[in-house]
Length: 79
Image 1 (cartoon, rainbow, N blue to C red):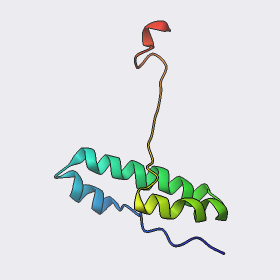
Image 2: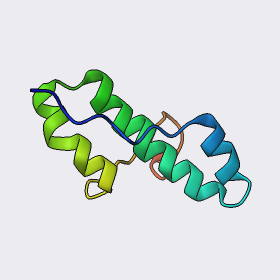
Image 3: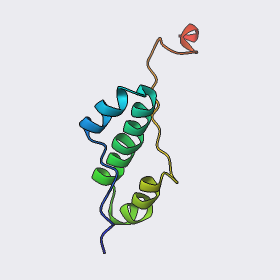
Image 4: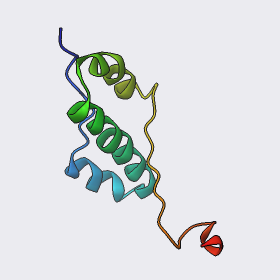
């Protein structure tokens, strides 16, 4: 079986339109649907698609993004 089709494609037009009014919300939705949802869609297998796509679409499972860089952030004084 295959997973249900993703409905979370957050187009650049959607992002641009929303960003005019609420940029932080546009970034949040872009991270959730594109980075998180896109990673599951493009890199996940059928079992992961079945398990996560509907959770991502409904936002029952919320994606996030974290990054760290040497000499930046709260621990930079320790380097």
